[in-house]
Length: 179
Image (tube, rainbow, N blue to C red; front, side, top):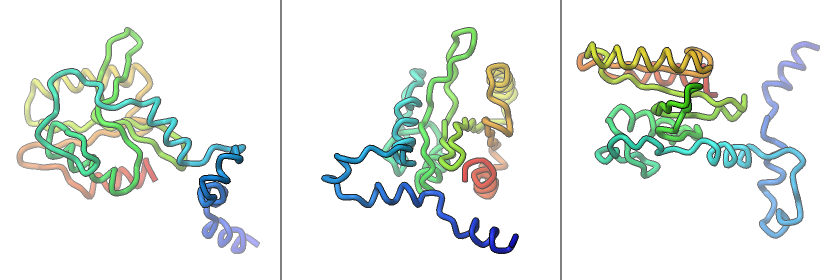
């Protein structure tokens, strides 16, 4: 019996009900209001709620992502392009308001579609610079104090000049937290 259940669960498509609606022609969709929002509907609502490009400190203009937005570093481009090509909904530099009404701007906010969970991603690109580390450790403490817990709803990647961003670590963190 357990083997049959395992086989069923392994072959079950979580999005099968979504496909019924999504495969309808536009004319039919007008007359159908899904009882449960489809994944695409949830993603669109999430994207509206989590606006990107909110950081007003200096415009990112050098690195253009596959999605067509500009980011501040080559590593942020690598991350954004990885999220985009793997169909992980994300926004770049959203506003995160702290309890004391200050705003922080994490590098990314992502949506785990399967778990319907929002996750923030901070990339620390200069951890060989002491003043940069001190500033960012303070930011991480602010995040923690305001409900973003490392390893739960906050992911951090790091690099130095001698140890660049490791895409294998990115892939592992995406596998653990986002798929």
